[in-house]
Length: 463
Image (cartoon, rainbow, N blue to C red):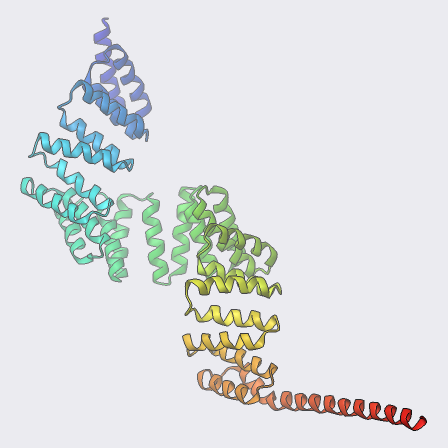
């Protein structure tokens, strides 16, 4: 048997193996054929396709380039190279390939079609629409063009026009992969959860193991406050992919929101084992810290939250939570530091002003605290907690009229506030005790004066 015949037979076997989706075995056969005849451009292109199936995109790109070195005018191979580069996120090189294709053959519609998607990904939406209309001049019934333009429109918040494009895609190709999901997400953006769910389920029927669709359905269930359904979706993802860190993380957030910090911690810790992204680790530290706060593991929570702040120093939610922990640990000076960091970003944050005021009270600075309580009330006129804190600070300072006025505001704003009612009832007692204390201090002062006078008189008399 000649080498050339053996090469042809190996290529034939590679095709048969590909039909059975045995990509690795097919690649071995094809590479054996290429070793015999390395100048066959088509075989290099076929090798690129197999490498893409094996998720070896960089190797696939090199295979397509080798094929084009042997046959520079094969537009299908150029198209495959451009799409592979785009899939890798190398948009600049992909655009070079597609621009060259359209210059070589102005009527090659895919050269414009794929640029719609790339320009949309780059946020160059005017260019995306330009490519769409150029493609339409060549082929009006391309479902890919409508799908890609729909993505561009959805990214700009033009939901109704995006829905038109997606529905047009379905008309042209009822089996188009991914379009039902896009329609579902568009309806979710419009607030139509029922239609959104219907289209997402339609997509899931065609691709039952797709974790992204299951995540979408879980988010939809949360929006509809169907917590059980959301938890089931996350658990389904974990069953299909036991190493799916996002599902563990989102399930943990769900348990935390439903008041079960122990279950939440188990999910977060598993997500942490699987995670390798710094920003996701920051979110994990934040939420693990919050779960630990709720289980009263305050020192551990402080460590977690301090690390989260290091990774995301401007996140107000983390700053607030860390301030709460430090305040509970009776470290008001440290807590005040984080309250001030929140206020440096947003001077109108009423909660931060209130918490800073509490820190200052604990530091013995009630006058300064009242300033922040009043700013909190100014920013949020119905913040009865700040009003009550201000009333207590006024009591500490002996400013009884101001305390009474502030308590009246609390009653008007929150008439069922038990703490305010109790303070209001006991205000006269605090004032009376303060008066007795003042009187006792005055009596002691007079006694001291009498003692000094008596001693002085005794000395004088003895003289």
